[in-house]
Length: 188
Image 1 (cartoon, helix red, strand yellow):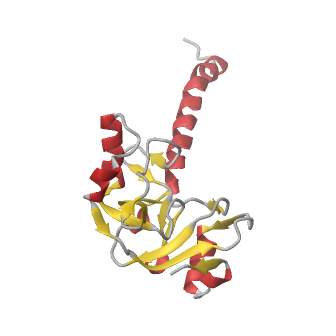
Image 2 (tube, one colour):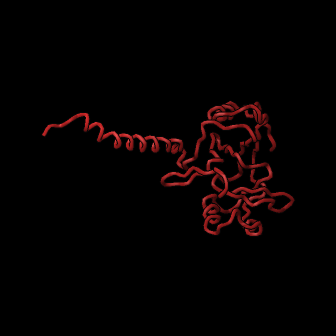
Image 3 (cartoon, rainbow, N blue to C red):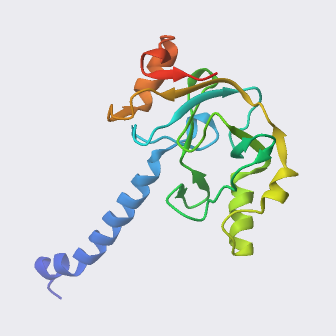
């Protein structure tokens, strides 16, 4: 039986493409930073428009739902089933609008100085939305879950939304150099 090399290569070509496709999909999972132990999604570059904030909280609320709170009441119910706020991995779902930074800071693309934190994780809230077929919990239910109405020790907002973008490394350098005020306005 004579082995024809050309036929063998043609026969194996589809398998090679499948293996390469799987490799590139698995490579994309490297966007998750496992060094923190929390699988924080670390975007390479953050656009400054429409803006984002950097803050420190009194306690660790990193995985908790935040929502706007003014004049003693919740102003809006968060909605997580709409939009592209999650990275869906093989073993976990990661909220990619919030990133742990150095020195206890958090970068958040959806938070405001008026936000509070609730006693429900983002994952449990998303699960509730999906199971109930609703976009957001009723405000009355959220009011029962309030953890802290004044959670922030520091709150910074990007000064120039037209700057273009920052990398995580640039922001962490500003923090380590104690120079956040160069590009961010301190609101608290």
